[in-house]
Image (cartoon, rainbow over all chains, first blue to last red):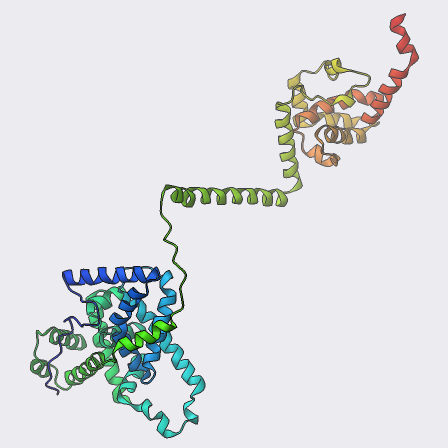
Length: 194
Length: 250
């Protein structure tokens, strides 16, 4: 049994908007202003959004794709730039909107790889990365039910807090917490089987 | 049992339960969960490359976006146009379309009733009440209206028209039963512009006030054994009769 104490997940993560009270409100206001300016074509504001959300998107992409995560992040922001005029603030964190785009980018990349890099035709050395522990874990995450997968990706890979995940998914924090532990239990079982 | 583990894991995550206590409460089960939790947390906090050079590269790739048109102002005119004008236009279009479809689909009898209705509406706005039409009074000029049915009050005419007795009585006349059947239709056709009136259809729709008048007119006209066109001929002949023209002078 590991002796490590859990990290304080609710502590603000520098790359992600903070959660609590006035700091959260200020961050949300700032993000809203940046988004509004970026919608109107403000490149500087979009750059600020890029710097703010690059790290969580990179971690998500790297967990699933390994190599090529930077390209996936760039593609995600490229699509976000094109899609910003149609963005509507529904109250969910902007991170959740970017997460939705990133999911599509990652899925497209998987399809592209399946088309151009069929595993059966590749030499052993080139597919070795696919059995890497992190990618095995990412593959197990993709097998989770949709909401459990979203909770794991948003909370652990992208660093969102329980409250942010709850807002993004339209669930209560208690429900998010329950889904998190069920997802971890399912992941553990899948990884033990492999 | 499972919910108990989840509850204790949540307490551990919040710092309310130590890892040792968690291990004691759920030996052999909590350890794997905590290890996985820690592994995922490490992935989520791993170092990432500096975003600045990546942003510089991305900035070069961003397409020039056209200047955004400001969001439409929600003013009174916009609300009026959106909430009132468009629904009204849509409703009007639906009513017109529905009416046109209904008219096209409805049976001929219904359409004819509608036509008769509009005729009666038109009559309401006529300067002179239409009673048989000018071609039904042979040799008469503008003062011949009383001569159409002088002995029949208007109420009686209406009753006759409604129950269609005129047609039946006239039909009893062996000489021109066909004329009776056709007479109203022809007359009504001339009067209303409904040129292809059928004898059966007319008989089936006796509510037309004009047809009652015409029916009574036919009854009186039957004696001459002619239809409207022959009336015109008679009128012409009578007006050309030199004796008639001379008599008043005598």
